[in-house]
Amino acid sequence: MAQADLKDIINTLFTAPVEASLMAEEGYRRIWIEWLKKLAKILDGTGGGKDLIESHLDMAPVMKFEAAIDVAITMRIVTVKETSGGGGLGLAVGPFQASGQFGFSNQNTSDSTLSARARYQLSNTNEQTLRGYLADAGIPVTKKEELPAAIEKMEATVAKEA
Image 1 (tube, rainbow, N blue to C red):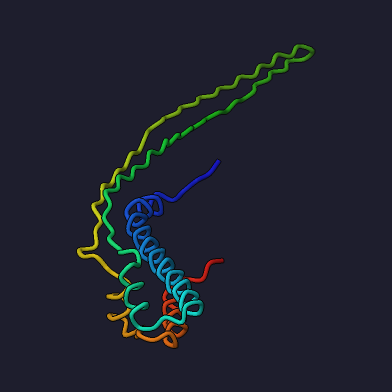
Image 2: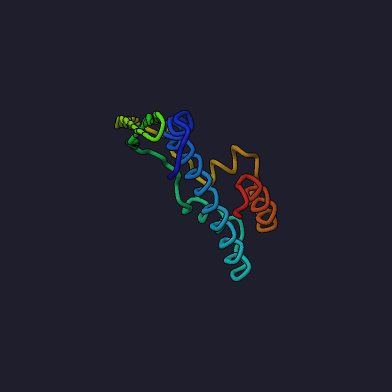
C-alpha cells in the first residue's frame, strides 16, 4: 500500500499549479525556438533579408497566460488497533489433573477522510511577443547571420529534455 507524507501532499497541492505555469512558459519558448529555426530555413531558401525577418517575427505566436485552476485531493486514512492475549492454568492433585486456557482479542478500527482543495487564478499581466522577448533579452535578430546565435541563446533558457 502506498503511503505519502501529509506535508508532501499539501506542498504538491499548493505548488503544482505554479510549477505548471512555469512549464507552460518554457513550452512557449520552445515553440519560439522552433519558429526561429523555421525562419532560418525560409531565409536559406529565399535569401530574404531584414523585411522578411521583421514580418515573420510579428507572425510568431503570442504568449498570454491565463488560467483558472481547481486542485483537490482526498485521502482515506484507516487506523487498525488490535490487542490480544491469553493464558492457561493447570492443577494436578495426585492422579487427577485439570487445566484450562483462555484467550481474548480486541480490534478497533477508525476510518477518516482528509480533503484539501485549492483554487488558483494565474495570469501574466501582458502579452509577450517573440520580438519583445528577444528585445528584452538583448538578443538581436535583424540579419540572417544573427539567427543561429539567437537560437542558441534561447535554447540555453529551456531545460534539456531527458
